[in-house]
Length: 222
Image (cartoon, rainbow, N blue to C red):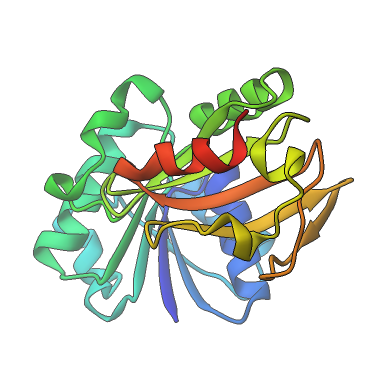
C-alpha cells in the first residue's frame, strides 16, 4: 500500500520506518525544510517530502490522491484534524488514521473531521495503568468504527464465570456482538479456539459492539 505520514517527529519517523520494513510505499511530509533534509539521510527507503501538510497545495504535490492510507502524526491536534479533513474530503483517501495528543480533544476525532481511526497515546497509557490495578474490570483500549465498536480488555479474577465454572469459549455462548480476539496468559499471546478454557489472571482481549459490553461482563466478570 501507499502510505503518507504527516509529521516528521519521533512518532512519524518511527511509523515510517516500521511501514517500510513491512514493504509499504511510504512518503513522509515534514514541515521544517532542515528537518526534512536530515530525515532523508536518516530514513532509507522513505520518500521525505518537505512541506506543510495542512496546506492543500502541499498535499497535491505529495500526490495524496494515490494514497491508500494517510496518517496524521504531528504533535498538534489542530494540525492533525486539518490534515485528516483535507485527506478525506478533498482527496478521497480511503483510510485516515489520526494521532490524538491531548485526550481532552478525543471527541473531535470522528468522521466529521475525516478520521477513520483515532489513536490516543495518553488514553492507551491510562488504560494500561488501569489494567495494572483493576482485575475483574472492563478496560476500554480503543474506540473503532467511529465509536460503534470497542477494543476492550478484561483481566480475569478467580470468581469470573468463565474461570469458576471452567467453561470453554464455545460454552460461554457469547453473542454475535462480541468476539474474543486474543488471550494473553503468562505474558504469552494465545489464539482463542472453541475449546479454550480460561484461567485466573488471563488477559482477555475482546472486540465488542459499543452497546454489548454487558455481554462481556456476564461472561468474564464475577
